[in-house]
Length: 341
Image 1: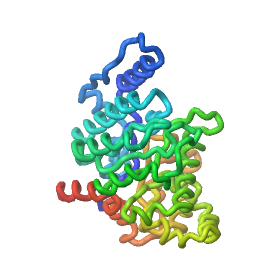
Image 2: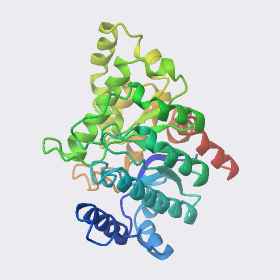
Image 3: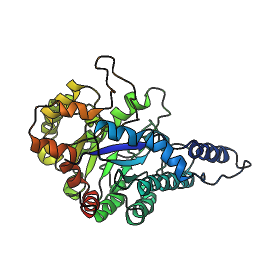
């Protein structure tokens, strides 16, 4: 059975890549400083960072392929301006493409978008088209809060987002809802801001009627859906109070949750509450939570172990590990078919 991880980031990119980013932001702050060019990184540098980290863990944990995108916390759309974001996003996506080219059986690309606070999302369309049509990527990460924790953008259901959603539908690619770092001291990036954003996006979808206008639009809400599965009754009740259809009709034909939940009871709850067809295997390994759980002796982000422990049928297990993600990411499915997998 093919096992596909829908949630991976290049968190171990070679140091020169971050050095370029630091120099880029330094030039933005002081234009008298030299304007840097993207780092020159060798294939051997990429191999070293991948083979000792993501590829090694793939093998050890029994996965076959990871949907791989740039490091989410480093997108930092609130830093610089739109031109800075375009150059940085292109450099990040090009680096991920090189990983995919070196390991086409193990990785497939998902792109970072050049978003900036107060800048129309239409400015991100060209990079999405480039990454899908030229680089062969199969999806993107969409930041609902480019301001970095101040939430100055309109809700995802606002028509300001519609030109980008139209392009997603045209290209037939989904987006993972994924914020980046936060400049608001009230919100720890991975412990609060990420989970807040997952939950907020779901509530925005509940309040609006986005999928009436875009019936084939698809989103993956990571980190197990944030707080949503735990408060499923609340959201069912809110849908009723707001005179919206039941969640399964209103949202869940278009929204999917991953399994980046780092303990067995959380996974058990996710599978008890959310329909099996709406869950995609994901780990975000070498990501937000990298340590070993002292209660189990295993890595927190070895999420395959939690799914292996579930009492579900072989058919349902296949859906989680490959079937659902191939349905949600049809371009990935086509690539796997071409590889004979």
